[in-house]
Length: 349
Ligand code: SF4
Image (cartoon, rainbow, N blue to C red):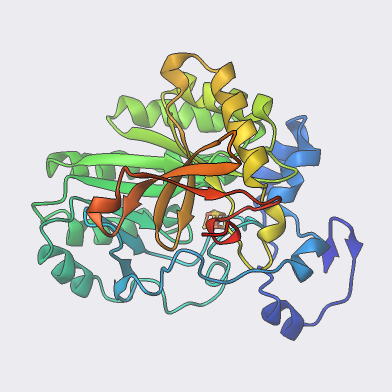
């Protein structure tokens, strides 16, 4: 296998055992990063590195298996359903937290939409569904339409959210002439269509991406962006501030900056919490008030935790942004910080 650090013989069995995702990158993205002026950072997003071979961690850091209620549907937080609609992506990110399923055959994606519809129909507390994977937009628009056919009749769903990195990997996907009608269906059903882009770095935002985002916004689609804080890629407040400012300029609201997770074969991307907090603060110092819409988040087994500060008392202050148990949401708590902790479980009780 060709690694950033040089070629190395490796057997298929070893790749499986070490959780190494297959290498695949679109021509568009390869050219975009080569011409971006940031190749030395962006190459780590898609090109394999030997660090993956010995990067410790687990496969399911957020308890996705435990929160699966019917195959392919997770219901962890009361208002939100998470639907894994495919295990395929246009390119494979080396830091992906779903390495256990992306790029391979998986029984974790939705095989039976009728069961999903039935479950959601019986849960009126669920107001929004997030389509994820894999990348939903690798599916044909006809397949996405079939998913809508099952979701749109559910009256208590207010919005359909779709997470995608295709605006970075293959933005021309959004020039499909069938897409305006797809989003129109969502509007006609009285619901909001929200696309969650995944730009980690300003060098990923191409002219084609911006044009297609502007075009879809003009059709009433709302946009949010999520990024992952990644060692060697974007662990720099200048880069992240430029990325978020650019998102804001295109009408895409910076939403989450995720702490990278301790995933087997990807934990070398983690940045210690002390440094992460310095970066997050550095980003807010560089942005106008209207652009400071992101939260620095750890998506932990116990819930979504906003990472707030490292106090003079040596404790990391955090707050549950989402939790299975509503009474825990919004409460600030703290743990002693120990260098180089990167995750809640690295901090003593
Ligand atoms: S596009 Fe998303 S799901 Fe696919 S490999 Fe990248 S991070 Fe994982």
